[in-house]
Amino acid sequence: MISPKGKRAINFFIVYSILVALVIICLFPVYFIFIGSVNPGSSLHSSQIFPSPADWNWGHYKALFAEHDYLTWYKNTMFIAISNMLISTTFGVFSGYAFSKFRFAGKKQGLMAIIILQMFPTIMGMIAIYTLLGAFGLLDTHLGYILVLAAGSVAFNTWIVKGFFDGIPNSLMEAARIDGASNTDIFVKVMLPLATPIIAFVAFNSFIGASMDFIMAEVILRSSSNWTLAQGLFTLVSGQANNNFTVFAAGAVLISVPLMVLFFVFQRFIVEGLTAGAEKG
Image 1 (cartoon, rainbow, N blue to C red):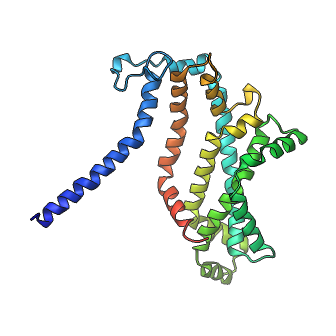
Image 2: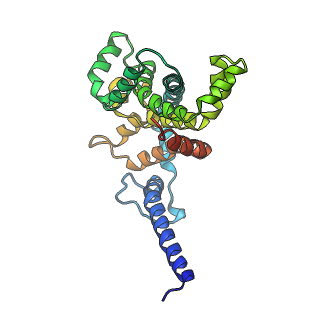
Image 3: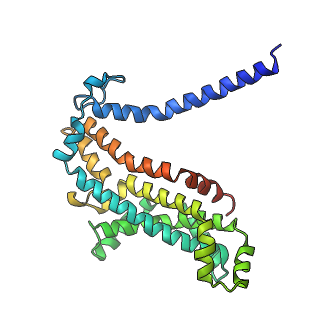
C-alpha cells in the first residue's frame, strides 16, 4: 500500500514531468533557431544542436545590416504594426462598447453580420482588395496595407470586446448617470479603466497579426523599400540561388525581441482579457 504522502509525491512527479516536457517541446524550436543563427555556414541542416560557445558566429547578424535592407524592413514592420494596433484597437473598443451597452436600430443584424464576417478570411477578398486599392491609388503604399489589416480585424476585435463589456454590470453606468456623468464621461472614466485587460489583449493581438502577416503584404507591397520583415526575410530563402537560412534565422531572432518584450510586459492583462472576453457573447 502506498501512503497518502507517497501518492502526493507520485502525482507531483507526474505533473511536473509533463510540464517540463511541454516546456522543452515549446522552447526547442526557439533554441534551434537561435543556435542556427550563430552556426557557421548558410544551411540549418548542418547546424550543431549544442555547439561550443567558441564556435558561435555572430557574422550573420552583421550581414543582415551590411548586406541586406534589414533595418528598412524592420522600420516598415514596426510602423505598420503600431499603426494597425492603434487603429484596430480604437475601432474595436468603440464598436464593441456600442454593441454591448447601447440600443439602436439594426443592432441584432449588425452582430449577425460580424459573426458571418469572422467566418471568411481576408484572403478570400484578395482580388477585390487589390482592385479597390488600385482604384484609389493605394497599391504599394503602407497606408493601403494598414487599412486592409485594420479593416480585417475589426469584426474579431468588436466581438471579443463586446463580450468583455457584457460582463460589466450596467448598474455602474446607471450610478454614474445619477451623479451627472455624460456618456463620454462614463466611457472614459468608468469603462476604459475596467477594460484595460481586453484592450491590452486586442492591442497585442493586432500588433502580432501585422508583424507576422506575409500573404497580404506580398500582394499589396511590391517595392523593396516598402517591404516588411516577412517579405524581406523570405527573399533570403526563396529560389535556388538564395539559401541564407542562417541569416534568415538571425533575422527571425531579432524580430522576436519586441514581441517577447510586449508579451512579458502585458502578460497579466493579456491572459485576463483572453479569458474574460470569452465569457459572454
